[in-house]
Amino acid sequence: ICKGCVHANYLREEEEGIESTCPFCRRPVPKTAAESKLNRTKRIEKNDPAAMREEGARCCAEKDYAGALELWTKASELGDADAHYQLSVMHCFDRSTVRDVKKELYHMEEAAIRGHQIARHNLGCHEGRNGRIERAMKHF
Image 1 (spheres, rainbow, N blue to C red):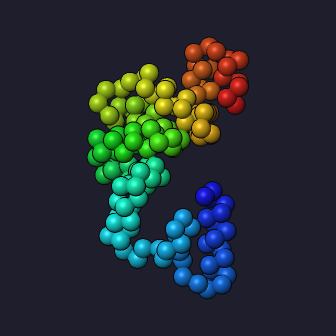
Image 2: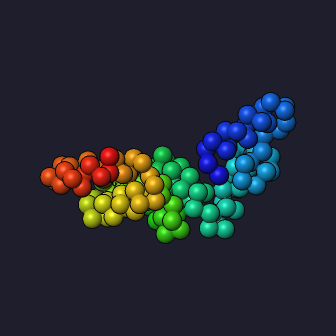
């Protein structure tokens, strides 16, 4: 579901005065962090790349880079563009083990191919810094 559809659903619920529901499953929105974690864990067990990506972001915020790397890797294998982008950032800023430019570029390219706009922009900047101006311009 796109962000516009999620927002439209939120506006409809506000306008009609009904309880907020998840735009994916239509169940009531969790009221506590524990409920939210339980729902996310269930979605991860069912190989939901969006849930893996979000849990990876939580791990990264808590400086659990190994956990984030594992979750984003699995989400990227399932085709999640944002997970590919986060992996490229992780490899760029040395949050995994060792900075790996090849992996950084691989994940940046995969994210760009899947429509991630920031990855595409960053890829264009990378090409420009390396003197491949015509190739860089295609990304912009």
